[in-house]
Image (cartoon, rainbow, N blue to C red):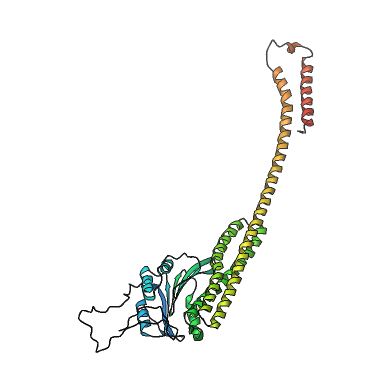
Length: 386
């Protein structure tokens, strides 16, 4: 019986050393020896989250286990093999089982469980822990959907933990299995293929965002009312996109330095440099999109302000014209009120009014009304009310 004791070393074939012991037939354990038990007790499995698991030797698939327990067992039994395990939103028990089997660090396992991590590259002994933010463009909603991918890379295993719909790792596996010469290079080659798929997935997003920016520029100058909200929402997505792409530049340079240090295949290093170039280009495009959206938002604010000023000017002009009309109406009302007041006074039916029996009373009242009206007219005219 063979038992895995550790994964610290590497054998002459590039895989991890498997420390084992085998008892011969003539060696009988003393009665006091306890019964031998497996070093790692498999945890309960949720097989729905195991998307795909396979063992590879020399770039060719040699086994397709259905559960994590079968994967562990066959990896022990088949020397010089590499395990590639893909999971989607795994349970706590599954990750703890993987951690016990492959000596994964507790902090990395905790990050993989919680998700919502920033892109990063960390090394725990001989195991690399990589966090990636994949993206895809949704045409119908005209928005960017982000997914999260955690990758554990060891001497003879690759474990991917996916949170979200992107990226499509089945296509990555198919591409690698179609190129056994590349897959033969080991876990580092699988990590390169995953990085390349994530970065290639940014290209449709960049294209979709470019179309959105062009449409927004047209809407801004056409006076579309909802363009401000669209600019804001796309700017928020560009912030998320920037957070996903910018750390990748430093991560890839650190990874290339590590590959050079540990003597990784030169062809694989060239592939990785190509991915780094694409990431740099994408990061620059995202930065330009964010700056362009900021400029567009400023232009839109200026146009909105100009439109508001024009509306305020029109309202002010309308108010001024209305005020002029009110002045005229008020002036004529005052002019007409003067004779009405005089006529009202003399129209009162009192017997003892001195002017009622005065011969010049009527002409004087008419003259008084005319004088008041003419005086008011000239006063209002002088003040430009008429």
